[in-house]
Amino acid sequence: MSTEWNVYLDNNATTPTDPRVVEKMIPYFHEISANPSSIHGAGRRARDAVEEAREIISRLVNCRTEEVYFTSGGTEADNLAIKGTALSQNERKKIITSEIEHHAVLTTCEHMAKFGYEIVKTPVDQHGIVDLDFLSKSVDENTLLVSIMHANNEVGTIEPMGEITRVAHRHGAIVHTDAVQTTGKIPIDIDALGIDMLSLSGHKFYGPKGIGALVVRRGIRFEPLHHGGHHEKNKRAGTENVPGIVGLGKACDIALAEMASEEERIKAMRERLWAGIDHNVEDVRLNGHPQKRLANTLNVSVRYIEGESMLLNLDMHGIFASSGSACTSGSLEASHVLLAMGLPHELAHGSLRFSLGRFNKDEEIDHVIKVFPEIVRKLRAISPLYKDKSGRH
Ligand SMILES: Cc1ncc(COP(=O)(O)O)c(C=O)c1O
Image (tube, protein in one colour):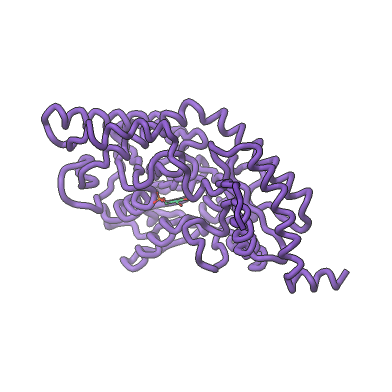
């Protein structure tokens, strides 16, 4: 089946690089391509570009410029935060996280169990909000780190970071947040929220892939994972990815200027998409918090059919969405996030995530609203589960 449509609704997996970002990066591949550690003029120009980007990032999250450490992306930033703090001390042996973290945090925490750390996973309610009572009871004098994501990549629920840091700091625990899905999408004030460490990633908000940062507040101790040269104040050895860093800076610059208006426009499209689905398909359910949710994320469960079948059919109509978590799609395991939110397996398997972005247009949403109910009808017609249900009526 051929289609002229090319509707990209998988922006939580990755975003297309904004052409303005690409344009800003290009000179740094050739004209300004010296090593920023070189002391000659060419090196200094590259260094200036790196430091300018660091400054823009610090404005986006409201931290000091020297608190930004460049990494290869969100995964490395998460690893550096968790392992780096653990390597810097030997007193506290508990790490608290949540059940709905991205695997970059979950797997890293689980790995630390091999080194004698007790790992506690905070449960969430039906909307994906962490249980603050449980957290409060779990944090103690033995807790090194509380690592809870700012917003979830699958359902978009935004966690109450201010309350989380208040609870954790009572016992002197460090708070890390994986803000990969919120940076550039919603305002972040690391100071006001009391966050100690924050991970961000360029390719989730129209910057290039393979670049990110870990923000570490002054006074928080952490050891590097990469050893070598003196880059990033001895915390992350390796020649800087200058074009990537410049691109990340430009993505932050655009976000600072356009975040508010963009959020409104994307939210209106998402609400229209949900209304179109909800009115035309029976037995659908919205997953995630009804209000405290990223403006671009729509996660739905469609009863009696599989997420993967819907995805493949949407693909044939030129619509690109996702089922389960982006990074594990391709696996047929039900989403650990939806299961933690209490969804039965059947609904977790029948889930689909549409994540909208800067480059989506109204007519693309109209195309999905037209095509999707037809796909559901077709799949339900061959679904044994649906036949059982119809037979019971
Ligand atoms: C919440 C979250 N954390 C971390 C990552 C990993 O980021 P990166 O792809 O930059 O390594 C992702 C990417 O899917 C994510 O959604």
